[in-house]
Image 1 (cartoon, helix red, strand yellow):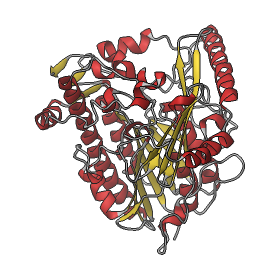
Image 2: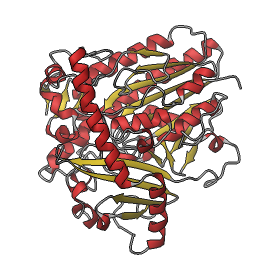
Image 3: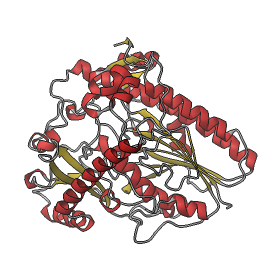
Image 4: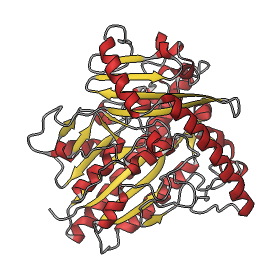
Length: 490
């Protein structure tokens, strides 16, 4: 097969449970069609339930602690390898259309073209007052801490941004291009604010859905201060139903964009006479009321398990992969599909292409999948840190928070997919093995020290950048006055 054109849609904050093919409440006919006509990965995990570390891990194919990105105020240097580099060397034109949450002087990291800009600041020193003025009352609702507080039907910056990014992508696909294409289209939805088109919001309000574990607080949740900090105990069932309705509506809207992009990509490859691979994933999920938590930054399934569906030439039809896989595996996979490789001492991910073989059997390519998170509380110099890690291997999922040994948890994901029973006392040898895997990946105390040093560096960068002029480049700034918190339906 000749080098295929490849297009990946990467959304922001889409929990895998909220897809039709996974039995979720959101209607996702385009993703359902992709799952039926291609291969879906049902145990696919982010390497960090936080935007920038997850995305930098995606492009680098390495763990957040290995690349030195454990916070949204950090980035990789321009010399850090990404899987885009071998694609360029293999003759590809690498194109980013929309969101990737790059920050600093290098806003490419191997993408030859960037179209459309990003929603979030692309520099270190942009005053909060600038995006706050552009987003109005909705500005606090972009953060997990404000997510469930503004919910309803109306207009939001996310709608306008995603609409523009998809328009630009469709325009790009309508034109001929000389080289084989590797394209990432990055949408901001279904990330909060939880403000959705009124008709879609009302559709899901009528379903009156509340996450089934809205009131579930096992001991390993209430006894873990870091997990407890992500809870919203004051949220009522009515507020929970509204938040879930808006989230499902935003996912259905994103699914519509996926359908448009898949159709345009198919027409492009047909005109060009090329093979093609089309995929969809997200950087991390959203708790959206599970255990009365909102946003990301936990290792529960809604925050760390994300959709991954691939379809096209060389991709098996109707295959369901249940072996755990991770976001770091995507770069090596795309490179192998493109006839090159992304591997070596800088790369933690592995290619998933062997899973497309005709005789593939479960477990053949099994490997531990890790996710890392730096929990923070307070501000320097009193800031408290806890390096947290998740290891998923086979049916087992292990979670540990540094400094809180009594809160470690072990879940049997085959028999307890809702993570309700901590099995660590029943299977201590399994927990020890997975803990050893976690310790081989990173030393907790070192990770916390390095995080603190990087945060100090980012503060220096902000001061120096402000002193020479804030380069507020490649940021989308076109939010209209009508999309700043005025809800049509609550």
